Length: 219
Image (tube, rainbow, N blue to C red; front, side):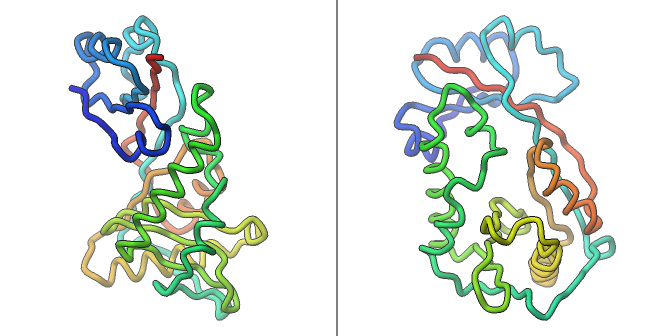
């Protein structure tokens, strides 16, 4: 009912856990050990047990999905992608880029540790060669990390946001992944991140599997 999340433990320097079921028993067990707990529940689920046991809301996640038929591919000669990417430049873009993330929104967690969590995740993806560099006129402008057909971590440099360039890179990366034999591409995004939500919608993605994210801290 409760499993450890060692990648979060490494960032937050405390025991971290994820509940795999929503029940009175699992919530009671969460109160028995020191650490930080995460639970994902259907938005329509009755939340009374969560409030009873001290869990607090942090975010709602949505899953964008798209296949080759629906994907709207848009191109620009200045926008290119490559798996040749400078790790230090990518980590500099990553650091502090995920203010919409549930760990940054959790008032019980330090923002610096939340930044470290995403930096560590990107380093793991880079080591596994699962990151596309996003280039504008040959300069690194951002990255998209993936696990198979799942876009798991992505960000743009501050100076490259709000210019309408993202659609070129996202459609290029999605096209590459679909060419490798995947029947669809998917991701997971915060419902509060309207810029990314609108990007996915504009490229033909649809959304499903919403999940409310609740956290709990045992000091």
